Length: 456
Image (cartoon, rainbow, N blue to C red; front, side, top):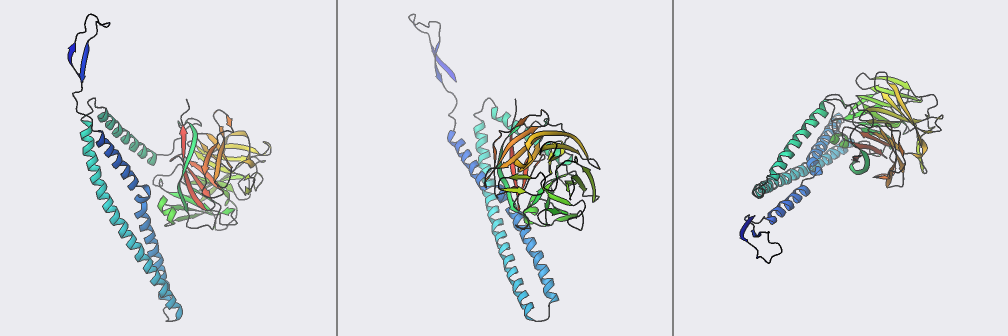
C-alpha cells in the first residue's frame, strides 16, 4: 500500500493538521478463484478417498483367502469319497460352484485394484496441481503467516507420531481419577463400526473390545467372548489380530478357561474387560471377581462384600426387559479396572470399587451412589467418572447419569443420546487407548466415538 500525491488542506479545513493521501495498492490482486479451485479439488479428494475404500482391498483379499481354505477342505473331503457314487458327484458340483464364486471374487478384486490405480494416478496429479497453486498463492503472504502455519502443522504431526509410538510401546498411564485432561463428556457420535461376528446372530449376549493395557506386540489385537451356554455362560476368549480379521472372522486364537461350561471360575454374564492380558469377569455362581491370566491360563479371585448382588439379584434392566446375570459390571479407564455392583446395605444402589490388578486382585477404594441399579442398562468409566445409560426406545439409549469419584458429585441431567443399530445394548465399555465405546448389541459388535469439552 503506497501513499501518493500528499495534499495539504486549505486553511479553511477543520482538520488543518491532517495529511490527506491517495492510497494505491501496489500488490497484484489476490487470485481468489485459484483458492476456490483448490478447496473444490480438496473436497472432491476427500469424497473419493474414504476409510471404507482404503480397507476394501484388504477385505476382499481376506475373504478370498477364507474361500480358498474352504475349497481346500472340500477337495480333501472329495478325495476321501472317491468311489464314483452320486454323493461324490454332488460334491463335485459344490466345488464347481465354489470355484465360480472364487472367480467372481478375483474379478471383483481385479476391478477394484484397477479402479484404485486409476484413482491413485488422478489424485496424485490433482495433488501436484494443488501444491503448485498453493506455492503460487503463498507469494501473496508477505508476513509469512502461511509458511509458519505449515511449519507448525509439521511439528504437530511429528508430536502426534511420537505420541503414537509411546502409546504403542508403553503401558497405559495410571492417572488418579479426575485428572485425565479430557474434560466432561458432551456427546457420543457414530456408530463408527457396525458388524456381525463370525457367529452371525447365534449369540445375542457377549462382549468384545481391546486390551486397555496390552503387552508389547498385542496393541492391535481385539478380543471377543460369546455366552455360548444359555446366553449366560462362557468358557473361552477368542482373539483376533486386527479389526478386519474380527469383522471377517478369520484367523482367531481361542484360549479356554475350562473345557466345561459352566463350571467353577468360568464366565457368568456379559460384563467383562481385558486389562494387562487378563480378563476380569463375574465368576460362575458366586459374588466374586475372577481374573483369568491368558498367558498362564490361571484364575485368581477376590470376593465382593457378602451382601453384594449376584445371580440376578440386582441386574441391569428397563421397563421392557431385564438383562439377566448383569449383577456385576466391569469397566476400564485411564487408571485401571473397576467393578460396578449393588448391595442390600446400600438399598440396591450402585457401588463402585477399584480393582487392583495384582495377582490375586484386590478391592481398593469403594464409592456409594444414589443410583438404583435396576433403572440402569449399562455403565462405563472415563477418567474416574462413572457414566450410566438407560433405555429410551428401540433407536435411542441415553447417557443420563454421572458420578465423579474425585469430587463425589452426582448428576442426573446429562441427556447424551446414543443412536442404536439394534434394540438392546447388552455390553458397553470405554477404552482409554482410543477413547471409543465398545458395544455388544443383540449379536452385533459396534463402536462409538466419545466427545469431551474442557471444563474451566
